[in-house]
Amino acid sequence: MKKKILITILVILVFAGGYFGYTRYYQKNMVNQKEQIDEKNTMEVTTGSMKKTIPVSGNIYPIKEQALSFSTQGTVASVNIEEGDTVSKGDILIELKNNKTKLELIRAENNYKNTQINGSQNAIKEARLNYEIAQENLEETQLKAPFSGVVTELSVQKGDYINSGQKVATLIDNSNYEVKANIDESELADLKVGQDVEISMEALPGLQLTGQLTEISSKAVSTSGVVTVPITVLVDSVNNSFKPGLSADMEIITEFVNDKIIVPVTAIVNREGKKMVQKVIDQKTKLVEVETGLTDGLRIVIQSGLKAGEEIVVNSAGNSNTNNAQNRSNNFSGPPRGGN
Image (tube, rainbow, N blue to C red; front, side, top):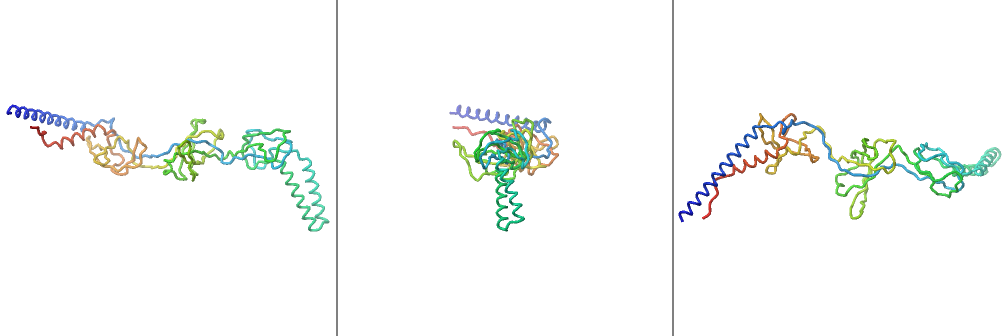
C-alpha cells in the first residue's frame, strides 16, 4: 500500500515539474518573441478607401431600338441606306413607288389654292382637308428616320413588294447604352437605385466603364428553381465598338468609405468577444481594442482604436497563440490531483 502511495506521489511530482518547466520555457520564449519585432511582419497604419461590391454579368443594349415598317403597301422604289449607316432624324431611308400619290398631292394643292380665291368657306375647308390627306398619303410611302442613330438591320431591296406593317429595317440610338442583367435574390437587400457601377467587357479588354443602377424590377424571375431580379444599369459613356448584345461584367458598389484607417484582416485578434490589434510600442507589442467596420475579405476598416502613423503587427496569428499560452499558464494553480 505504501509502495502505491509512493509511486503516485512520484508521478505527481514528475508531472508537476514537467508542466512547470514547460510553462516557464514558453513564457520566456513568448517574451523573446515580443521583444524581437520582425519588420517584415509589421506595418505603419495609413488611411485609404474601400468599397464593397456585388458582381453580376449581363448584356449591353442601346436604350432606344425600333423596328421600322410602312403603314401602307407597295413596291420599293429606292433604298437609301445600308446596314451600319449613321442617319439623322427625318432622313428618308426607304421610298415606295409613289408617282400616283405625288400627282394626287399636286392636284390637291392646286385645288386648295384656287378655292382660296373664289370658293366659299366650306369649299376652302374641304380643299384644305383634301390637301392634308394627300400629304399624309405621300408621307406614308416614305420611311423616315424617327430619331438619329445607326441602321443595324435591313431586310428589303429595290423592287420588293411589301405589306403594311412588315418590318423592313431596324434603327438604334447609339448615343446611349444600358446593361440588362439578372441579380440573385439574396443580393436584393443591398441594392438601391443610383448606386455606382464599374463595367468591363470581354470583347473590349482594357476598357473600363462606369454607370449607375437605374432600375430594379418589381417582379422576380424564376428559372430552373433559381430566383433572380432583373436590373438595368445606364452606361455613362459610349464606345464606337459597342454592339447590341455584347456581354458585360459589372461590380455594383453597395458601400464605399474614403480616408479611413484600413489594415489587413490578419492584424485582427479576437479576444473574449473583443477585436484587438497588436500595436508596436518601443519595440514591444501591446494589445489594444479596436472597433471595425467595412471589410472586403482581405482588408478591414478601423473605426476607432488606431491612428495613422502608428505601427502594428500585420499577422497576429503567431503572437495570438503565445498570448493564449500565457493565459493558460497564468490560470495554472498547481499540479493535478492524483487518484487513489
